[in-house]
Length: 399
Image (cartoon, rainbow, N blue to C red; front, side, top):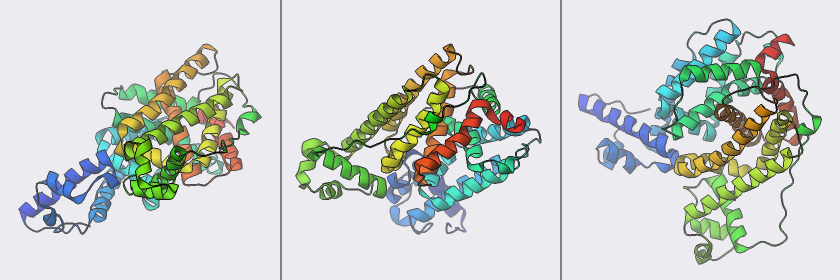
């Protein structure tokens, strides 16, 4: 909690600190912000900062609390009692928060990833609302998967928008598409998923010989994933890899260069793994499930890369955008073909790809990053998810 000043000029300074710190945390993430950076933007000397906050963590906690309160004010607005009205208003509220408070959204997004208590607070708030969904038998459903199916597409749109200022959309049309997807899914018929789609497994490639470059990358993946990019030094990487300090610069220009190579290698490995798996399925509906399973299995082996990719969003957003743009572009091509083959209901291909990317992203966070799930857990969750993906929430009402 901030030390509340009594004088008017002190209150104005406190507000400048909070406003500028919020901008910095939203743009650079917690680890990318220092107290001198905040003080400089607020127009004060660094020692003066400590008249208001004891350290960076106390400042960050206050800003996160403000963001959480703004989110609560939006998300707890009254909702209609019919399913379509309930979902429409909920999505409109959620999207409205992300559009009206983009900095708060980004700060909460990062805080949820690195703080279990904030994640729990956000999830508890969302659960308290979606627990009131006007669906018969909702209490018997897998609540985590139900919430993930509804929320992930909206969240991902917010993330996409927050990093691409030129991304424009008609809010009403977007909410209509989100609602259509949530209520009806993407299956135009009555397709039954192939059991093989849930049984996909991934075996990591075993290298008989390791090069020095590979050892450095393995060390960087481990350290960036556990300590974070900012708190890892090149000397940590070389020590972990068991090589001399100067050897690093034979292979990489700097710390960013090895991060870029890690992200690029992950992108290649993931896309190759998913493409190899889904090539076994002629129906895109089965391929979607198999692709989600392959994604989960891949990151179960490369769990640290989940944290690394997420941190990259805040330190080098251009690298993060390139990583996801490559994924989205291939997804859009597959969706367009599925439309032609009558294997998916018609949506805007770009939007549907974002909806599905969001589900894949947050499914991986829930089952891999926070859940330490097994292959059996993945298959069970995907079976529950497939019901919603194919036919939406209306099918849950009819069952």
